[in-house]
Amino acid sequence: QDTVVALQALAQYGYLTFSKNSLNTVQVNFAESPSKTFQVNDENRFLLQQASLATIPGNYSVEVNGTGCVYLQTTLRYNVRLPKKAAGFSLSVQLANVSCTSSFPPKFDLVLSASYTGNRKVSNMAIIDVKMLSGFVPVRSSLEKVKNGSKVK
Image (tube, rainbow, N blue to C red):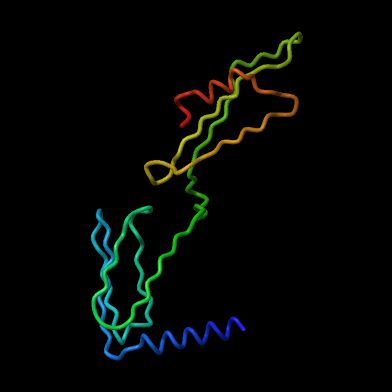
């Protein structure tokens, strides 16, 4: 039932918006980059014309002049996998101040260094989740240092 209603709506939309001799100029504007202009006419009205947006997020405007109907669409893809060779972050893990005496339980500092290596100036958000080895617990004062440290933003 839904498919029939959708097809009827699309047919009615096409009937109401179709015009012969249509000619439209579509201009996509962004403050910091040159505008992109598309010509839509009877010969290319079913042709997909597309352009990548230079900056995301950003404020864009679209100006359409002419006669006829133009269909505009934007697509934003989240969590796009990076190619294997292009990692977005680097991570280094080292042990420091290792103390393994027989009278005390083993104690060491776990030094994590993470940095963003992607193409943009900054990453949007990153979370480092550290799981403790079985039998080990973090020293509470060290957790406070991490929370209050200036290197963690």
